[in-house]
Image (cartoon, rainbow, N blue to C red; front, top):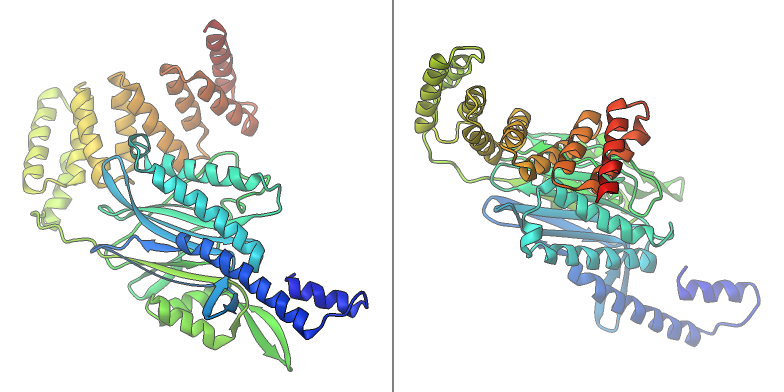
Length: 455
């Protein structure tokens, strides 16, 4: 409750008398506090993710607006950030939308905490160590750090967030949603949702899933990602002369996105016409328009043909002939991932693991969503005793497929190879909490404890 509301409530109880002059002084002081708070929030609302391929638009309107002296300002709990970051020598677009609990000062406090924390996290990306993280690991560390901060408030401050990074070159979106409204994709004049808002609870809650999950979505040319806070659905509507809060259903929002062709100003205007917005509101969009690749492309017939060239079980002479054919394909189109994938598997069969690893890596550079190539990369890395890269790749698998227990166990085994015993034990303990009957995990736990005891 605001200072003025508190004073008026006391006056109604007959505890004291509040004169108009006193109310004016209180309002001036309150608006001064609001003004200073609004100045603290402003640096953390930024849109620096635009370039030729990525067009980001957003509207952020806090519910509480006020006038202080000659300034028209607003405060609330919504925050939006976009920026370019670099990971593993690739450029990514980072987008973040948060909605802190409470309106006015309480929500603003959450927005300031979040903004300051995110600014620190983004500044850390300039370091070599942070630029060498995989996208999955970067998202995990960002989530972990933010959640740790909000847990310290012991439930007195929580926030829903949408956190994503987009691989600018490939269009692969890595994202997570902590009880934030679902994000829509507008493609070919049709809108649909791409995420599950209940993957995680709001930051600051004492419960959550055992294993961290990163979801993936491949953006195509012309796609528009549309999201925002829950203020987009909460409206004051008048019924029989009484104001009630109306919550727009998810399907209704999709129809608005379609009607407005994914354009944020038009979506905001349409929502405003339906009724008075009853909460802080953020609306954002990201349109993906990658540069055209001028390199030669194979015809559809040629693309189909190479799918039948590759046969796994052949003698070495025929395999070498297949390798030559695949290399001819790559001369025509150096980015043909089918040919690279085939080369990786062919070289693996004839035990040329370095070459196999190289081609698997090339596939992942162009098509990082390719599961087969990722598994090939892991296998070849292990064969070459390149345990650092094998461990990193297996961690990606555990983040993408957290429900697959075998990935977690293999990840723990690889952590042992690089003497990461404490991390390996943590992984195995988490596996046994989810699946106590897992014999392989129990055996591995004894081995890890034994290794730790020998150090």
